[in-house]
Amino acid sequence: MTREIDYLNARIRGMSGRLISEERIRSLLSASAPEVWSAALRDTPYAGYLTVGTDSRLLYRAVDASIAARTHRLDRIAAGRPGEAVKVCLAEWDMHNLLALTSGLHHRASPMNILNCTLAGGVLDSLQLEALAHCKASKEASDLLAVWRFPYHRAFRHAMGSDQSRLLGQKRFELVRSYIHAIIENARKTGYVVLMRFLRDRIDQTNMMTALMWRTLPSDRDPSEFHIAGGESVSMKIFRSVLAAGTILDAVSKLPSGWMKKSMQETALDPELGERASALHQTMEAELIHRYSRPSARHPMGIELLLAYLLSLRREGSRLKLTLMRLLFDIPEELFIRMAGRI
Image (tube, rainbow, N blue to C red; front, side, top):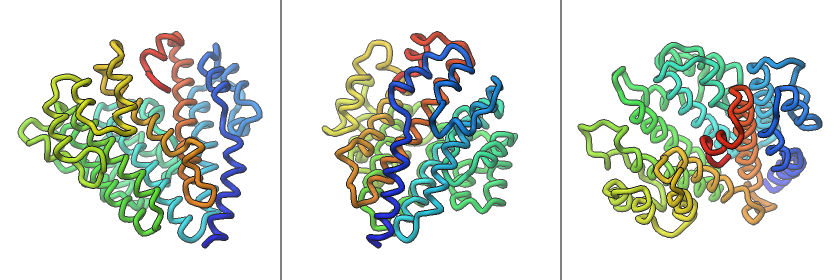
């Protein structure tokens, strides 16, 4: 067992050295043309996937292909309990892709717009994500996942339901609840405490966002029915108190001291961002990633290095896609930062 985790961590240390620096991310955000954006990625793991030209689809695909190549390499080399931990992490990655797919299909977004919001790297590869983005309805996507024998296809089908009038907020909530409970069972089998702690934090994040956005849920049901058990910071009692809060700042004050409250307070006090639930979600997401990827969280002999690397890689890919979106839609940099919030 020690040999398996030591080998995996040695590979992760090498791959972590190829993550993009903050300085390079800033240069990508300031890029004036697709050619400049591509040139800024020279001598990075993305370079081999970038082709000559300005076709936005090819640029997005290059990001997906590079990210997926690295995560799937880890999946191939990891064995034993570390290998099972990799699969749990990649499954959690796909939960976010399926949430983006759910929103896109609900709003009848174009395949390209859906793919802009996903990131290959989980169990589902880039070609599968593209096929899902071209589906006309959630049932078609459910059928595809079943045909591919995707491990969590039942969670997706259950969340979409048979009622076509089901609200988007309910679909997203049911997807997270069904999906994350299945992931937790698999995480528990690995025996790695840090994976369980991370997923409990993910449940807390979901519960907080559900409470803040309760108006998107069915009006004929008690909002407390949409609380997910298994977290640590957002109990049912706190969930109810957040539901009853009159303002975002008041809602944040109901949380116990900890990473979530600290991360949300500053955003809640911002006059431009404080009342935007999306900004609060971005803040929580960035803080959650930092919580598990900061140097002090990377235990050199445990699975912490794996979790830190995958979270850092996912954030990197998402940020690259955001900088590309700004460029392709010709959004002024300052306006984009104000709209996108913390990237």
